[in-house]
Structures are given as C-alpha cells and as structure tokens.
Length: 254
Ligand SMILES: [Zn+2]
Image 1 (cartoon, rainbow, N blue to C red):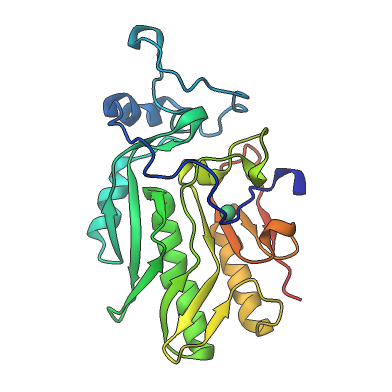
Image 2 (cartoon, protein in one colour):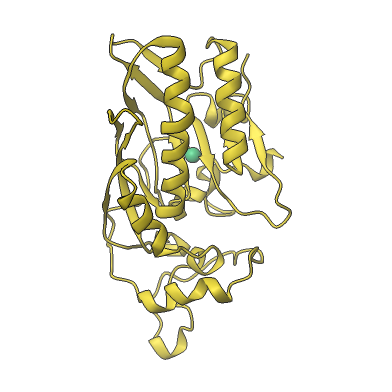
C-alpha cells in the first residue's frame, strides 16, 4: 500500500497558498456536485496551467474540484457552528490541478467549554475537510490528551494546503494537500509547557491507540510513523475518496 501514500513534510519548497489567488467561476463549481460521479476516474497525468479561452474550457476550475466537488454550504455551516475560529481566504487556483475554490484558514478550534485552541501555523483547507479536521481535533485529540496529561493550549507544526505531488516526487499524483483535503499534525503544547509529539513511539500506548483508532475511523488516509520515512515526525490525515472505499491506516505505535 505504500505506493499510494499521500506524503507530507514541512519543508516549504513549493507554491504557497498565497500564490496568486484568482476569483473562480463559482456557478460552474457550485453546480458540479449534482452531476459528478461519487468516485471519479483516475486523474489526468498533467493539466496545463495555462488559461485556455473560456469557450474551449468546459471546466475551467482545477481538476480536483470537478472530481471531488466542494460544497460551499459546508463553509457556511462550519463558520456558523461556533466550533472553530476560521476565516474565508481568496480562492486558490494553483497550477497542475492544485487549488481550493472556497478555502478557509482554520485558525483555532473552540472546545465545548469555550476554550480556544490555536492551530499554528493556520492551515488553509477546503471546508468539508476543515470540518472533519476540527471535529477530530476538538472531539478526539484534545479531550484524549487532556484526560491523560493536562490542559492543552495550542497545536503546533500544522500543515494544510500545499501545491505538490505525493511524497514530494516530481511526478505521480497530486498530494491531497494540493486540494486542501489533508492536514499534518506534529505536536500539542500543554499549559505547563511540555509538548506532546503525536508521532513519538514513546507515547502512552492507550492514548496513542485511541488517537489512531479515532483518526482511522474518521479519515480515509492516516499516515504516521512506520508508514514511510516522511511520516516519522508527524501524522498526516486526509479524506481522499477512493473508488473501493478502502482506507489506509498506517501509524505504528511502538
Ligand atoms: Zn501530509
């Protein structure tokens, strides 16, 4: 299964989310979901970053949006939920299929007791994924950590949108990060200053087992230590849709 890993590390070598956002043709993107099949065919190997004349471009949005359409209603729901501190940012149309039509910067989650937990750096994500990521962070990760080890004050070493191929290869498929459909989590800091490293093999086994199980229930891809060398330092979560519905759950605890 390792050939299918969606890799992720933090070295910033590629186009940033702030790249050259351009307002997308929203109506086409909004109507796409009803027409799109639930599981798309394999992606084209390469998509031209040029801008063809509109009359020659039946789907001018980046390929991932047609394959895995975004629903702007999920942005409204998340922003109105009171469970996050998030900001809409300009649509991202990167090269080669990278992009997010309706991105959010997920700045913090708000816990049930109204405490605000900053997420740093703030990841830029598509809204349905941001909803799931925030749900796991606030509903599983932080309560589990706090039950074992005290009050969490922030998450750090977080990655979101990034326009690149999987495992930073020059070829192959796009990373789910290139669609804002993935997050990388490295550490949580507690009020007393100590830091919990998610990918550490020295973590409490019950705690780590619970985190892995809850992540693998919610997400379609979970990659941590043992998955490959790129995931020894952090845990990658994404919601890549797969035709067979299979999940990848690779996170060694010891
Ligand atoms: Zn990743």
